[in-house]
Image (cartoon, rainbow, N blue to C red; front, side, top):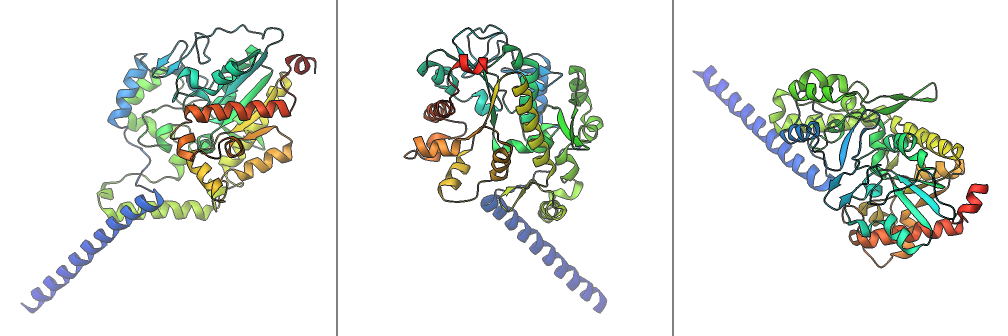
Length: 403
C-alpha cells in the first residue's frame, strides 16, 4: 500500500509538471506570435495543403489567372492574362499597349523587372507608376515585365529571355527587400508553408565564385501532376537545394504538444544563429550568408548583362511599410549592406526610402504602402524615379543610344 501511495504521488507530481510545462509552452507560443510574430511553421515534407492542391489543379487546367507555367522561370506573367486590377498584353508586359521590338526614334524606352511591387497587381492600371510616368512625361514608354512573387533570379531570367529583345534604353531592376529569401528558395511552400502559390522556381548557387543556374526542379507540367498525386515522394527531392527545407524543422507526430512546437521553433532559430549564416544578423543582412552572396552575384550579372546589351541598369529598392516606419524612427535599414555594395561597385540605384521621405513626408507608411504601394505611393515612385533620371541626365534617348 505504501508503495502504491508513493507511486500515485509521483504520478500526480509528474502529471502536474507535464500540464504546467504544456501551459507554459502554450503561453510562450502565444507571446512569440504576438510580440515577435514568430509562429509554428514547419517545412512541409509529406503533403501540401488543401488550398495548394486546389491552386495546382487550377494551374494545370490553365486557370492560373495572371500567371502561367514557365520551364525557365518556374512561373511568369500570363500573356493576355487577367486578374483583378491586372491586364497583360499578348507579348507579356503588363497593360493593353502593344510594343515594337525596337523603340521608336525620340522615345525613351524603360523596361522594369521584379516582384509584385513592379508587377503592381494591387492597383488599377491607370494608378500604376509606369502608367503615371508615361502619362506625365512626353515620349516615354515603360514596359512592365514584373511578375508576382518573383525573386531577383527570376527577374534576371525574365530580362534575358523576354525583356532584352525589346532593346530598352534603361533597365529598372526592382528589388523588394524580403526577396533576398527567394534567392535560396526552390519551392515556395518551403519558405511560406501556407502560400497559395505552391510552385517551384530555379535558383542560382555559387561554385568557385561563379553563378551556376539550377533549373526549376518541376521542369514539366507533368511533374506538377505527379506532385498532386504523390507529394511525399517528390518533396524531399524539391528540398535538395532549398535553404528552408535543409535548415527548417519538420512536423512530427508529437507536434500536437505545445512544448514540442516551442522546442522546434527555439532549436531552429538557435541552430541557424549558431552557424553564423542566418540571412539576417543584428537587424541587417548578413553579408556572410549564402542568400546575400547569391543575391549580390545576381545583381552583378544583371547589371553587367544589361550594360553589354547597351542599356543603362538602375536598381530600385522598394521598401515595405515596416521599413518606412523603421527608417523614420531612426532604426536600422535591413538592406544597408546591399546599398553599401552598390556604392562600392559604382551601380546606379534608387532607395525609395529617400524618395518617400523627400516627396511624401507628410504621409504615413500605411498610406504609402498598406500592403503593396497605394495609388499615391505609386505617384511618388514615378516622381522619385523621374527626378533621378533627370539628375543623372538619362532622359534623352538620343544621347543614350549614341553613347
